[in-house]
Length: 444
Image 1 (cartoon, helix red, strand yellow):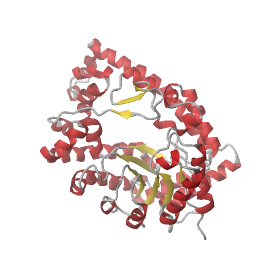
Image 2 (cartoon, one colour):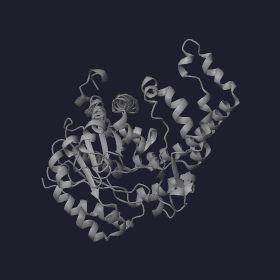
Image 3 (cartoon, one colour):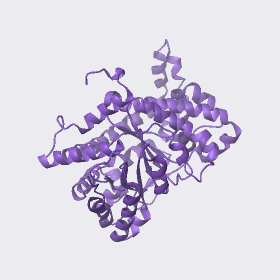
Image 4 (cartoon, helix red, strand yellow):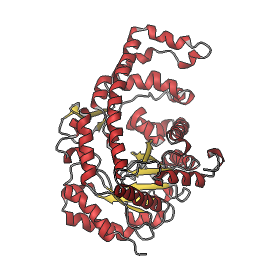
């Protein structure tokens, strides 16, 4: 790299990120064949994300927690047994052919959540049955309607003394902390808070949870190391949340966010702009100095049925677009999972610089998505989860051929599920890869 990072254009930064992604000189592989597979997979993703024609349509299997069930256990087991977590994901990696591999980083540590009395979700064995194959998010009002000014003025202090105590049972004592700003010029004030035995107990719980989380993290990293050795490029550089979803999911809740759109829209917009700045800073830190190519955003409440076009245009899209544009300046591609249907949103989301987004569509009309975003963004999806879980391999292949015919011409398409298919028959996941290899090859 001849130029300093700060001197590079966005396009030069993106190319440097991809150079590191594709380069194999500093990576260890288990065999020459694994190295060759890495090079092929990395080049395939380079081409498709640059809206070029690859050798064939890449595949992203809708696995999520499927490896646990394929390994003969369930989500509850791998949340608490990290050796089983590694065993199941490595078994899946070895037994399935795919172009991209997602490790178990989205399997939360059940022990850590138990230690901290985490209150934002129910999970198998904690609020829902041990045999349930997903999490149940529990919306809580962690921010009151009259607290927007507090959030905007000092987000870190607001999170520390308001949000965390309301969301994590073992941190309730943090309500008794003084403002962090009290330590300006007087650092001892920060230490003085620990004189309160309730606060010391909360810190001890944090340490206990951190030690447990370290064990979980080592298991996740072990899988990632083996995946790299086997020839799988690491795709994800971090996960963020759309600013509206930050408010509607974890701060105000759905009812609170809807009320605020009518009762205090300007406060809400100002808060989302502030949140966007924080997300941008976090993404830049996570992918600093050219490490990683993409930052991912699952979009929870932007779909066609949650709000009107006018509301989407005012409340959802501007702050999200601000993030996309800012990350592009750092050479970072934004990967966006459009949960639900985005048929009415296509006219908005195409308003971004070409080549800086990739969209995973759940229930969006893929023919319309291809038409709207052709030459602007890479698209993927939308094999129905119901089809992958309950259909036959022949029906899965038939739908995949339709998607390839519709979306693959000209490049810029990844064959993928619309959402996860955790308890799908193994032969249906294999059918997705099989049809891509047989039917998704581009003619040169």
